Length: 213
Image (cartoon, rainbow, N blue to C red):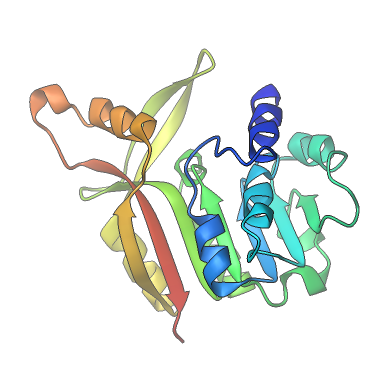
C-alpha cells in the first residue's frame, strides 16, 4: 500500500514512477471513459490529466477491495476517478462507452487470460492498451517472482494464442513494442536463462489493440 501511495505522489508531481503509454494514447484519441485493470492507486490517471489533452469523464480502477477502500478516500468526488473490485459494481454509464481498457504490469499475476477476455467481451472498448505484458513465443509458462520477500507465481503468456483470441473478439493489433523499462528487461533476461543462451522465450511488451468489428 505504501508503494502505491509513493507512486501516486510522484505522478502528482508529473514524475512517471514507471513507464506508461496511456497519457500519449489519451492525448491522441481524447477518451472520456477509461477502465484500468489492476491500476493500484490510480497514479496513471494523474499523468493522463497532466497531459492537458487527456481529459476524461470517468477513470475506473478495478482492484482488490483493500486498495479500493484505501484510495477511494484519496481522490475528490469530482475527480472522475473511482474504484471498484468488480465491473458489475460500477454504474452502467461508467462502462457503457469504454474508450480505453488499460492494464500495466498486472496480467502476469492472473492464472490465465479468462478474466481479461471476459472484461473485453463485456466492455467492448474502442482500444486496449497493455503495458508491461509478459509474453512468450513458446508455450505459456510460469516462474516465481520474489515480491517483498514472497515467492509469487509470474506468468508469461503465449503471444500467438492471445492474438487469436483478441481477433475472435474483433480486435486488431496496431502496435507491439518492447516495454521501455530496464527493470522489466533485466527480469525477463534472468528468467528466460540468458546465461544458457535460451533467449527469446520471454519478453515484456506494450501492446495496443483497436476494435475493428
